[in-house]
Structure formats: structure tokens, C-alpha cells
Length: 113
Ligand code: AMP
Ligand code: ZN
Image: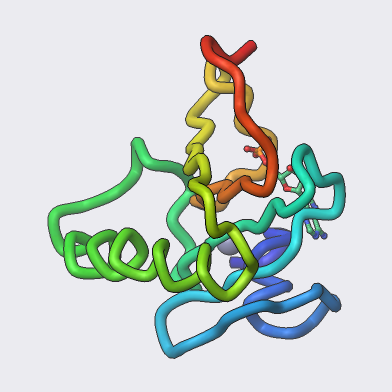
């Protein structure tokens, strides 16, 4: 989708620090890391948010979740991690392309802010 920064990253129109990529997803380091390791997992397909996921996206969502442990291992998250999705206004979503934050290499707090 035009004017979507994460579509531009997926299409290599703007640079990112990629840690993993396949035909369905791309994973890159967040520009403003909130943990020693903070990567974003995004589908290459433009989906605006978790609210916009359709039944036909089930396989894609399963693929994303199934890759998490592999991405955690390859980025050194050997003692656990946190997977976060911010959705909509109350969720403080700022980029309107579905993404999951994967954070690790420090002890997290609960509840989140
Ligand atoms: P959210 O607030 O959940 O929508 O998360 C958006 C995330 O995208 C933030 O953590 C930003 O730091 C990150 N971000 C925005 N632009 C870029 C970019 N060009 N490359 C990497 N991360 C980005
Ligand atoms: Zn997009």
C-alpha cells in the first residue's frame, strides 16, 4: 500500500536492519528499541491492524506465531521474551500495518504502561 512505511520496508524501498525474511514475513530491528533486543515481525501483506485480520489470514497469523521461537533464538533471547501487538488508539498503535514487537534480553515488567 502506498504511503505505508512498513510496506516500503517489506518492498526494500527504505532500508531496515533485517534479521529474518521469507515469502510471507520480514523481521527487522525497531528504530527505537525498548529492550536490548527489539525486533518487529510484519507480514509482507498489508493488513492495517489486528482488527483488520480476515479468516483467510489465519495461515499467515499461524506462520508468524510459529516463527517467534526461531526469531527469538536467532536474536539471542535465550531466557524468554515478550511478544506485543498494539492495536488501535487505546493500544497506542502508531504504524497502521500489522506488526508484532518481540522484545528480549532483559526482565520485563507487568503490568505494561
Ligand atoms: P507501534 O507503536 O506499535 O505502532 O509500533 C511502531 C514501531 O515502529 C515503533 O516501535 C517504532 O519505533 C517503529 N518504527 C517506526 N518506523 C520505523 C522504521 N523505519 N524502522 C524500524 N522501526 C520503525
Ligand atoms: Zn503496509
